[in-house]
Image (cartoon, rainbow, N blue to C red; front, side):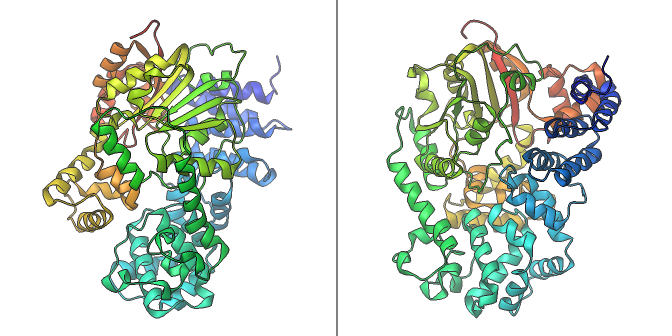
Length: 569
């Protein structure tokens, strides 16, 4: 009837893209037809570009997002969408220039970690940087360090990336460790200050996990506040407030941590702690809050209930509400999850709880800095939340249940807090995907490393020295291996359970929950490509067969949606 309507063509493409492999090519044709419509609203342009990626044409999706950025640089949809495609598209080279990557890293709607692989690929493509990294990996002395740091002070992408995200690369870790040593022992030229400030920010992001020599450990105030900040948290240094320095260093390394201490002291507490395991988990995250981050990559705009529910593979009808949506983030950590959810769920009331005051304070400080409203933070043990009188339309619990003494008991508590027409998003560790982690935990137990900063440092260096083929060595590819707080969570956690899909299926039956599908686009595309239209994407048995052949399919976590099947468990 109206063949030139972009919104209809985009909707048709989305339906076809979600109908399985047979619909991929027709979907792409519909999306291309939508792109040809003029004028094309920016939101539809972004939706079509995302649809091209979902239907398998990632190169054209990147081109469409880049076109949106070039024609409407003020619109956040292009920046946010391109970052998501680049993150989901693996390590492919999409032709993003260093300047474009640097601009994306600075954009408020882009989560910097989404660009880690693309940023590393661009940095390694720089011949000068590649030569320095190679020399550092060979153990060569990098002298004069001041001149090298001065040269790097003019590298925009490097200076943008270092304060924005942990680079999580052994070669660059060797380079930065060598340069830090050279600067503290040989002096910091004024022209090298921009690199040194950025390096100190990277050191804070990885929580000072890099190894250091005895002569470096003795570094004191004489080295200057910038270099001192590259070795230890400034807030722990006596008299730091009297040292000369620059404002951005004091804000990041002193003012922000002090604010977190004040916020932690005033944090509301909803429950006590149930058991010794909960106390151990709390103590771990008080010392090592997880993860440390700079920007959460907020969504460009809030979504309607139809859009939120419609994005779930086997979604039920959304509830008809005459009140704000009630959302619980059960185990919010340092706040990225809660902030991302708040940027999606319209004018929702979001309660974000965690057992760690240090993590909650970090989350609250970041939330206030971003000017985000509608999030209530409080300390709570999930196992003790049963007495909470509120009920929720959406409960999200990602990467938390598997750290409880009894994960099913915690899940049962949350199940009783979700409304009958509500949703739950759960994320749990896959046993198949964490074989390298299990091997590392055995390696740690055998060697007796302590779960403190010195023990984490020694353990990391010993793992890096393992020969290829050792079952623990693949853990180097995990981003969390490259930071102290993250490595503590990955390899030294006081409590960890892993799951299989049959075990999850049994838990859903016991809790009277319906499986609605995975929130894992890359795994879903691979599943469809392998099984075609014959396999049911809602069959956990089919997914178990897929994971058996592809044990790294859920290397992050099983991330999935469920809904009450009716009645209580």
